[in-house]
Amino acid sequence: MHYELYIDVFFLENFAMDFILLAVVRRMSGCSEAYWRISLGALFGSFLTCLAVALPVPYAFVKLLLLHGLANIVMVKTGLRTRGWQELARAWILLYVSGFLAGGVFGFFRQYVRTGSLFLALAVVSYYVVSGIWSLVVYLGRQSRYRCRVMLQKGDRKVFVQALIDTGNCLKDDITGKPVSIIDKNVMRKLWGENDITGIRYISYHSIGKAEGVMPLVTLDGMYVCRKEKEWIEKPLAAICEGDMTADRYEMILNPDVLIGGIDYGNKSRSTASI
Image: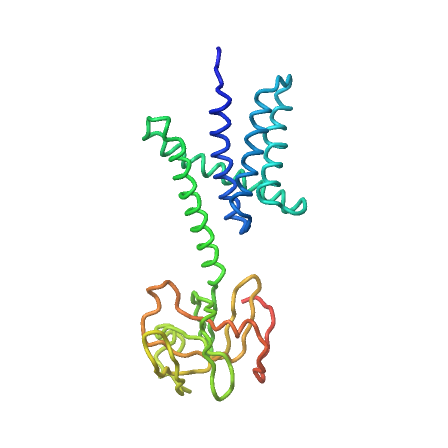
């Protein structure tokens, strides 16, 4: 079987795809290199790819090393100016991850387009779709990082809740100086059972959409914060939210100062233990 390869078309197609892949890796890695630098890396990558294809290399594995080794390493090193072997290896792996994603998106859209001249348009669409997928992955990763499971304890009663670690929650008790977390009212009813909630006092707060308000404040016996390790918090303060928090799939807004420390909690102790 005989094939004709137009080296100029092959070069331009590779240059376009290399530029898009490098741009995706730039976004994935948080690199700040200018796009002219990305263009230079794509130019080197496309040139070395054409060279590897055009050269009469007798062994297939040597050609594979030239294509996937030398060409891609030079392209990444030039376009992203990676420093050190670890950074280079990470960018090289991200290049193939973005290549698989872009190839899937490109193949999906290409089945609906029969005109070969739309190659560049499809490549640009693939870039934006892959960038959107990566942004979604990063967003979901951040969401899971700021969510955790918490066990609340009052007397003999224990309740497990899904908590959001909210860095915007700076609520503190004026009397003790302790950080205050916010808990859904239905959770408090489970903790106290049929008994009336005791030991209530009130704390003022400010929030978006409400200039000032007050919430009931209680002291729990303790709580376990389940992250990589289970952290026991003694006598935490909790404000009771009158609104419905479960609509956002969490039942507690955890004050990050509870975990960061740096405040004298008096008789508070913290240790790692199992529930």
